[in-house]
Length: 201
Figure 1: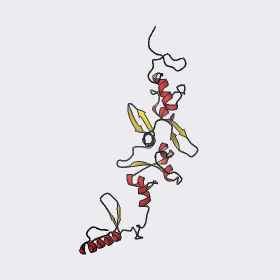
Figure 2: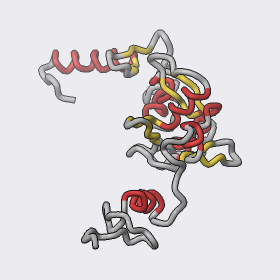
Figure 3: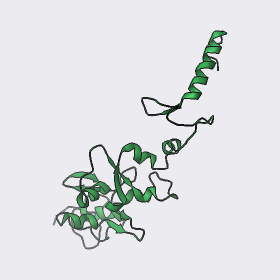
Figure 4: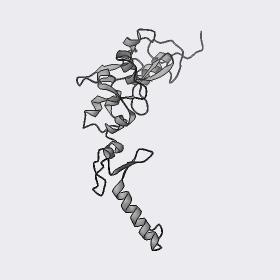
């Protein structure tokens, strides 16, 4: 009689892998906290069927990824020992390659003003290619609800000067600077320096 410890799952005699369960039952437990959950499609099956078995097509039109996620909330698809962003995989399989220098923006997020974004954003799990658009990193950021996007949407500086072509300077890092405010600061600094106040503000 073998002295190996059998899997704790009902009617399973396979060797324990972790948490008292064999490899397949442990993976099901890890995915759904139920070792007896229905298994995902076999890894050796049709790749598109395997991918779509992890997608929940919702009434809103989003295809929500139901399998593993990255730390920042995007779906992950494993194939041939490599890990791919699920939304990128879907786009490249059904539309074509993402152009060099561009990234995919979730249009379903951009059009949902109630979504606050971040890791909990459900739109990050959407893999529907019709909800994805290749854009520059800057455009992707500006379409979101981030602090950078909010600042970029401002048409005037805090003193009320317009951010127009004549009054706006961009730093090497892409930050906008109001020329009028910069001139006022420089004039004030020179005046203080002239009377011996140096860098006091």
